Length: 320
Ligand SMILES: Cc1cc2nc3c(=O)[nH]c(=O)nc-3n(C[C@H](O)[C@H](O)[C@H](O)COP(=O)(O)OP(=O)(O)OC[C@H]3O[C@@H](n4cnc5c(N)ncnc54)[C@H](O)[C@@H]3O)c2cc1C
Image 1: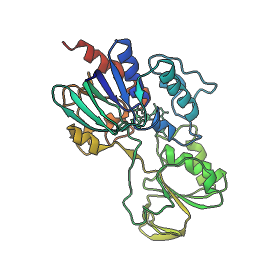
Image 2 (image 1 turned 60 degrees about the vertical axis):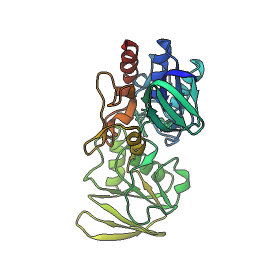
Image 3 (image 1 turned 135 degrees about the vertical axis):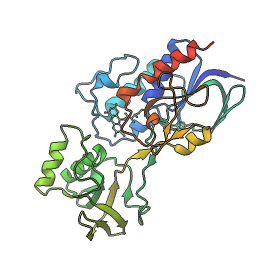
């Protein structure tokens, strides 16, 4: 039986940061990753720009050098995958962790085999499960919860749901490639968290009518050739539609967290952990990265959660 000091679930930026810290402390570790290295970033919109400057996305103080102050998806993939290669990180891509049980050690069942570890770090992020609207027609093939690039939407009637960074980026990109964009926004305005250099752009496009926007509105139903929504004053409207981009956010895999035995607190289902050590309610299971926010996916970023790696490994090495 091969016994690891630490098994890390998830090979995103924070899982990698934990691996680097474990390696520095001569701990025997392994990362199990269900996709490619930095899989969430791989699935981001192709032309996205991070709101963080490159230095704030660095892990283990390894310089993140880019020609632009704010890196894009490809820069970040080069950086994180480059680290995995150069530092010979022990990672098993395309293997999913299915179940974690505690006996003498943690027994971790994956889609390929069973591993044994003294400690487990859950760094599974939140990008795999879309936050559904639960309305009729949401399962039609023209409805997308992930946006990649604008070109499929040229000369099409596109509804974008939401007003966060993802919604605004895709509305602007599609409009600029000739799509007829209508934004349906539950709030009264474009989200305050939208990147400061992008917010005036979208607001001005809405003001001049290049992008249509309905604030205080709610999408009610999606049909093959139209959508029905409720306007701010309670009226229902039906408009012609070819595609719906539901940029309504994403959620951590709560089923996996619950099955592991983690306590999830309150409305946001925040995992319960000690903020000093990041240890969960189960001794030896730690939480790291953006998964820590539960449904509140605007709480943790790479910027402020990369510190979790040091907190966790310091605690593990200090154990008797
Ligand atoms: C479009 C977008 C832009 C963002 N921009 C910024 C920014 O500018 N600055 C910033 O600081 N943050 C930003 N964030 C937030 C943050 O960067 C990301 O959420 C980041 O990926 C978090 O890193 P992580 O390692 O915690 O999680 P992830 O990167 O999501 O990594 C989790 C990994 O776990 C894997 N996984 C999940 N379940 C399992 C399982 N059961 N078994 C095995 N593997 C599993 C996933 O495949 C994934 O690779 C952005 C997020 C989005 C969506």
